[in-house]
Length: 367
Image (tube, rainbow, N blue to C red; front, side, top):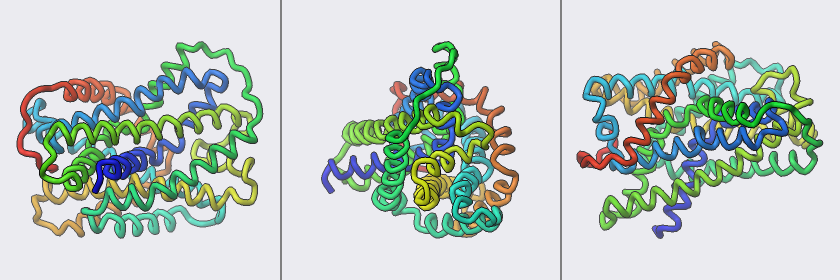
């Protein structure tokens, strides 16, 4: 496979993996709250929701896809504890149930009386099917799911901005908007998911590039892929934040997970339900599939030491995520928000340190 195709597939896969449930909600919320000052919010957002997560990706690739090498500075017990805590937050107690609920928000446009527990159950079955074969994860997401996601997002952004009303003026100081962008960028939890994403991406790059590529060459492919994935994210985030700013008066009184559906209804009319439903479902499935696969692998190898089948671990994990989703989006975010307030800044410092850490990594095994 040519280097260009490798970079395109990996870059699109990274975009699709990062752009999940929170990324569909929080940029709209940020635009809604800061309105005409959203450009300052966007700068803060890009720092914590784009630049910092990709620093984590590149730091992990520099460690040759080895999770133990990446967290080696924390000691054996410290590294395992941190990894377990992160996996639990981004796995069945955080991102996976959040993906179920955000995806359900779009589905309700077509079937408003449909029970959330039935939808979460069906979403879980789809997750099990997509996660059953781990080895094709990057290819499935980068080649098959991403085009549908990008198409739906493009329709929503272009149609929304084309018909958008004028942004109302607010007197919020630029410094405050920038700080808000930094803070709300934490809510995506993308730095936590970065090492999970990097593990899959590194394995894909190493497999496709072949044995002739050394560490520096693979890192270069990782940089190019990250630039592509991060660039697409920045464009989409700008579009979503602008939508939130333009349509702020129409979003008053709505729940955050309803923002995208409300904007689509106003701009696309009768076509909105299908476009939003497909976009949300594919976006959330791509992210949830990655997280489910990585968490299951960790549970199977590191916690249960292969004493239970990996497929049993997968089914149990999805069932736990299903149960967590029944708590509702607001309760899940309230739980996660308090933890991220203190954990995320520490992870940023560590990610920057690992990007420039020159200590030799162990053998490249993605654990």
